[in-house]
Image 1 (cartoon, rainbow, N blue to C red):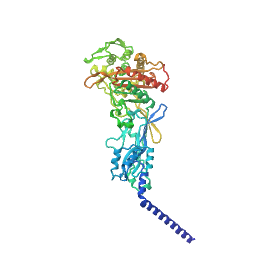
Image 2: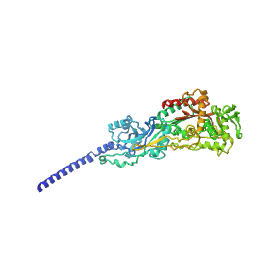
Image 3: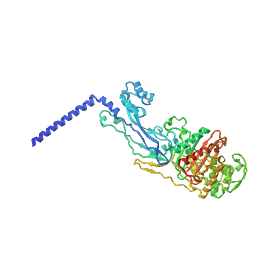
Image 4: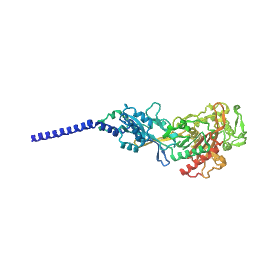
Length: 573
């Protein structure tokens, strides 16, 4: 029995020795005889991961039915690198590669000349199809590495809101520099090497030592309230304004006046974030509805009227004697047409957008009280919107309510005070939201790696007007839309809409106001007594038109009709 075990052990030992010898011979053959060939193959076949690929959370629009539409995503593909010393005929290799994908000749030629450099990247954003065709060529010295890049499927749609990523300064990692990409950088930012090197390949090349892996935990995707169809409607409308009136800038916001969720926000001119580096004027990157500050004109009269009614200074039945022009503090203030109307009620102040009527309300309210209302409306502060670079409104001419009378008289109709469009739409939303200021915002949730979406709830607003004041002023604004605006020709029989226009002279620093350049503005909410939407539009220096009633009333009407149909809003009258 013992002898049998010894024999078996010896046989097994011989077998193991034979296997070891065979493996040694095979390994010698692979490393020494065929080592150079396999090293080249290893480089080409296994270094298919970028040294540090980009990773970043997505940005989504939300459809009216709750579906998510990609606004910013990471696109996977390939980059091409070369080992210059292995490139025998650079021109031939370049021609072969450029026939399959975009390769910059100067970059390739310069890289191919660096014979001492083992790794030079020559092309990026290469598609899977092109990569497959390049592999099939089996060109010595040509490597494929994994690549990812930021892609914006919607192109120009909401571009200033979405923003884009880019290198900053001497940095080697792209970060958000505009829009949501910037303001939500910490949430969207991820880092992962995505690296896999086959251990068998490491036998033949030191490829792994050239690569680094620095994985970091994923943060998440952001979900926005931007409704892509509504955003498209807004931008198409703005394109129409550009085509007809060629303004220097035009923009708009469509918002839920109760929640502050923004369904659409944008301006023209715009840009495509996929090709942001081809833009000649970088100012188009900025969201002027948040980052710009303007004297928005007579839409301010709606807030002035609300302050007067809420303070008890005036009622719709209050009258005043309109003399056409007055001289507060030795300065001349006139109606837009210089005409006197005689004794008229408050409704006519809004119907005909009378500057002297607004001045009368400010005087009756008292400058200190008037100033408190303007500040309560948030016109001198930031809204806190979740987009970058928001500006603060400038109410400095109002001081504490003890300045020259002319400052308050002109502020009452939107001159001498400047605010951002997003601050103005928030203030005006108080008229549509029971007197409460909402919190404008774009992001509604963060989708975590687990698949769970964490909702973001906006802070509740402050009550700045009584509900009775809101009802009174809303009724007055409905009358403006039904009877005064374009002589009542755009009245909608079965839907009440509250609205007001604004036409403002553009200030010339140190030289007063332009006599031929204007800013047009328009706001409206609908249905007036149970609003689902508030809309703000503006255009700077439109050509061939003097008043906002002519330039923006029909664009607003188009948007209003679209919203009614798209959301199947039931008639309210």
